Image 1: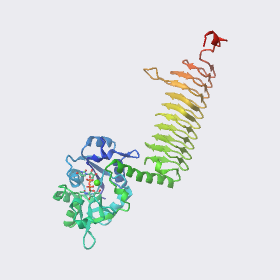
Image 2: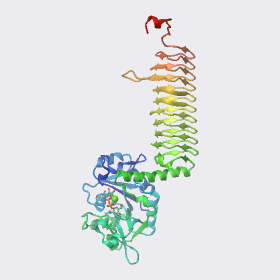
Image 3: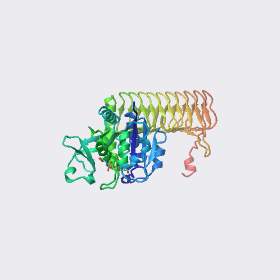
Image 4: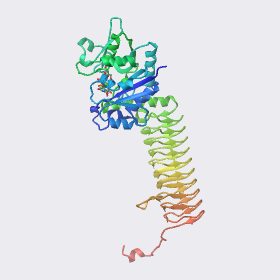
Length: 456
Ligand code: UD1
Ligand code: CA
């Protein structure tokens, strides 16, 4: 069985993005455009993928270094056909089918490509191109058909006659070729056109003239080949992707109060009966369990949340939150936290690189950093783990069922034993034994009539 390759053209300058970031690395819902295209190619069954890079080549190759793909370099931008020529060694080799896609069409679906390839194989085509009828064909290559209605050629906007300009069937810029037919066409491609470029779609006419079979496959959804060239188009693509993702979740039984105002990355997982309020951003493979309430106004990056948990107006990074826990409003959970079940992380609480055991309450205005806190602890308002002495950081250990009075400073390294009780306002710099009552503050003095004596 012949394999399927995919070649992705991404050598464009992307000048209209007005950005130092290469165009194809711009993100939609926290995933770069080229990553969408690469995933669509893989979903369609492509097992060998090559990306043609041009300017900013290093930034693109390093962003994709973890993927099992190869790169070809197009030093001069001489057209889409030339870009494919630059990857000739990738096209060569074993006989196979090869998909050609653009790196700036993030909305293309793997299933559409799969259908295109299946059609290409079934028809025994030398080349198949994705075509579409659009209301405004301006800027696209037009598909010219012969008297029998069969594909005859593609004409680029710049080269069209007035008659051809009216054609509203366009080349969507997605192709599947038999590799040996593509190689033959590349050898015969010329740049004698209005732009002086090597046009990839000219390969179709060349293959046809040599007796090959060329067919179009109709795209149903014009969004799929929307090319992103500017920040406005990036936004337009985001809106389409956002709707696809959010409507998908709603179909699966998740309530999204306002899908236009909810930003879920495609790698997000959410359990049934969870409610997502507006202003929520979930990214970095965040997983939310069942029966949760998330939002309004939360951003979670690489977070795993259990079932029945409520999180509102909060920021959480690279951490795990258990079941039936509440976070926020206005909590900040920084990386490497493991928060247990039935925990309360209340308003203006910051937790960093810490574990918090089941049933512990950190209700308000507290900083827990570099701490191992057990179960059933009550943190009074304004507790601070003093983890940094200006040079180094130290850990605090707080054992189960202890009570930390309001405004306690725990100067690390320090340990509070199981069931201990620390009086409010204490500054604790020595270990507290199990079940101890600890008070570490200056004794109050009352000077009777002191106000008069001191003339206050
Ligand atoms: C191309 C097609 C047109 C089709 C349209 C669909 C040609 C000549 N025309 O036009 O028929 O309707 O796509 O969107 O192919 N690229 C390179 N190197 C180059 C030139 C382009 O890598 O030298 C890449 C670009 O980064 C881009 C893609 O190829 O991702 C398409 O190039 P672009 O210039 O946008 O082609 P269009 O003029 O839109
Ligand atoms: Ca384009």
